[in-house]
Image 1 (tube, rainbow, N blue to C red):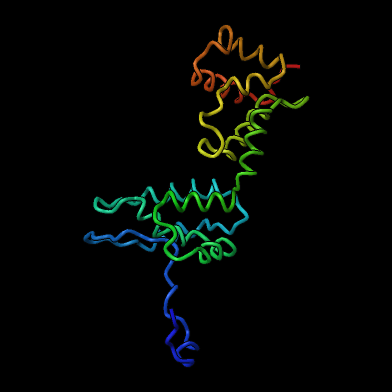
Image 2: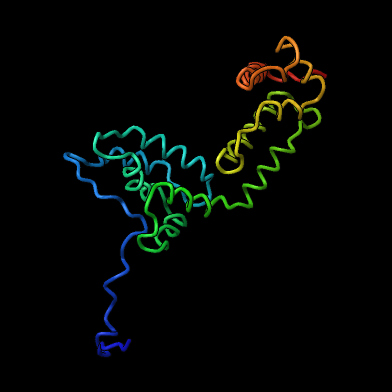
Length: 213
C-alpha cells in the first residue's frame, strides 16, 4: 500500500506507540483510590534487577494484600502498583516491553521471573536441592537453614511439580543426625507424615550445633 504522507508529515513525531505494557482492566468502582501511603509502602522496597525476584514478589504480594475493595479485584490493584515497585534497570525493562503486551497478573509474573530468574537458574537450584548433602562438620541447624535457603530460591511452581518432602533432607544427613531424627520420631523418621517430619526437623533445628560427633 502506497504511503500517501507528505515529507513534512513523515518528519513529524509519532503519536502512537506510547501505551504502557501493562493493560489494567477497566475499574468501574465507586470511591476507588490508591492511597499514597500504600504507594509509599510499595516503593519502600524497590526492585532494581539485582535483588532476588522471588523475595520481591513475596513482599509485593504481602503489601498489596492489605488493600481491599469489594468491587476491585486484587489482581487489578497489583497491575496498577507493580510499576511503582521497580527502579533503575528493572523499570527500564518494563518500559521496553511492547505496548499492551501484559494483560493479566500471571502474564506479568511470568515475564518478570523469566527476565530475572531464567530457566537456567531454576535448573541449577533444582539440582542443588536434589543433590543436597550435609557438609562435613556442618551442624544440623546450619544444614537445615542452607536447605531452606535453596527452597526459597526455587519456589514450587518454578522447579518442582510437588514440593521436596522431608525425606530429601533426611537422606542428606550424616548417620548421627539421622539417628537423632529417628529418636525424636520415636522410631523410623521416614514413617512419619511429611508435616510431622517437618515439625520434628524444625524442633531439632532450634538446638544450636545439634549435630552429634
